[in-house]
Length: 235
Image (cartoon, rainbow, N blue to C red; front, side, top):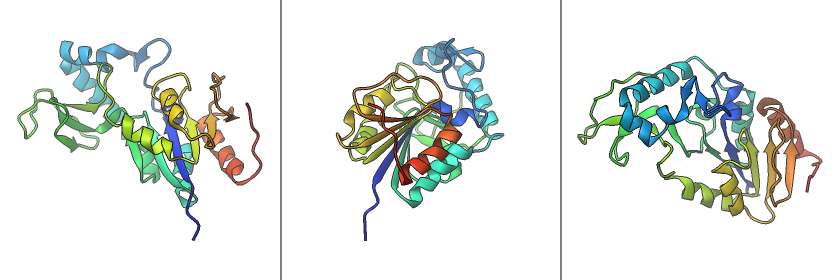
């Protein structure tokens, strides 16, 4: 029996945008009209933890009202043909809800909380709200299970190892010049095929890349055709 090729999807905010999820960091540095550094940094947590907790309570509430879009669903369907791992910068659970089974959340998960001390305790609270000051069973303060600016990305090495083994890499909804997608591509095998789906102009990288200049939903439909037919290459 022929082994399935390994395919890695590097996904970012552009995938969830069509579901109505605001992008994590817009060009003006705001996220849902909040300064990103006030609600998504270690400094912000120290300065106003109640604001941070309420911010993520609202994001969780919003997440409960949206659904996976066609891009999420097609990514899940890829598992019928490939051994797929999704490495996402998104903190929502739309990949899971669409049916993807192997997902690495580089920046944490919105539906979980954790202990403040090195995130040793993690609890899935779904779409519930939680109050600032609540303690984990280990006695530590509970906080959102999010990787904030100023913190290490604990799963980056695992993601790099997955990318190293990939036969096909799909970059979707994230810029090639923004970490961590840009760094992860350096781990790709020389003969790995790299597809980039983005409606905007993307900075070229020093690799042979197949560009699909479309939004996520349209781009994923085209990718399915590309994977099964002729491919247009851009050097």
